[in-house]
Image (cartoon, rainbow, N blue to C red; front, side, top):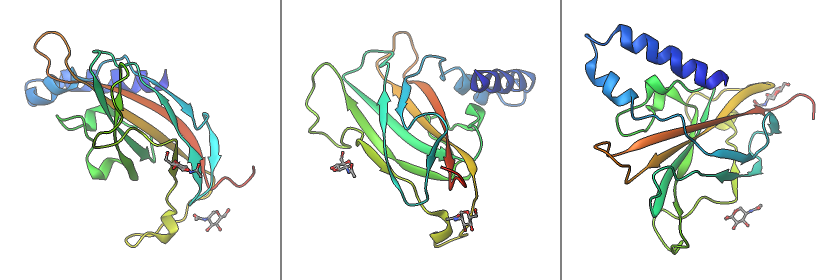
Length: 175
Ligand SMILES: *[C@@H]1O[C@H](CO)[C@@H](O)[C@H](O)[C@H]1NC(C)=O
Ligand SMILES: *[C@@H]1O[C@H](CO)[C@@H](O)[C@H](O)[C@H]1NC(C)=O
């Protein structure tokens, strides 16, 4: 809910700037409110730096495409869809880490594809070991965000995007 409120605020801000930035307004309409569910990790789960954790995403496949691309990110703050590029990706400056890009096969299609289906687990980076700008965080609330690309949508919209966000606690001080 909080995320939807953020999106609406972003939209309001964009409408105000419509004459200055018409392209952004068009792009913003491609993010639809329909999105999947992050079943794992659980909301507010504690995940240690460097730990492997279960990942399970239940997609909605809004436009019923055979294959549905997803990208999974880690954000330090709740993502703002007004930061999104036209192709549905977020600029590198907007997020902490990109876990990867996968393709969900639907309707019993073969998972022998590139990229492969999402894995059943992901590994949390240890940002204190980063080669550039190593950073320590203590008890930090971060956000796992899945961007779904809905292909084959009716009408003239080539691609629509669904955004799902769930919080986690990185380097929790109590567990
Ligand atoms: C993580 O997922 C991969 C691919 O889904 C699997 O091969 C591997 O065994 C899993 N590792 C753990 C620790 O669950
Ligand atoms: C985790 O937090 C502790 C303090 O609670 C800090 O000393 C440590 O450096 C942090 N680790 C990472 C990897 O950020």
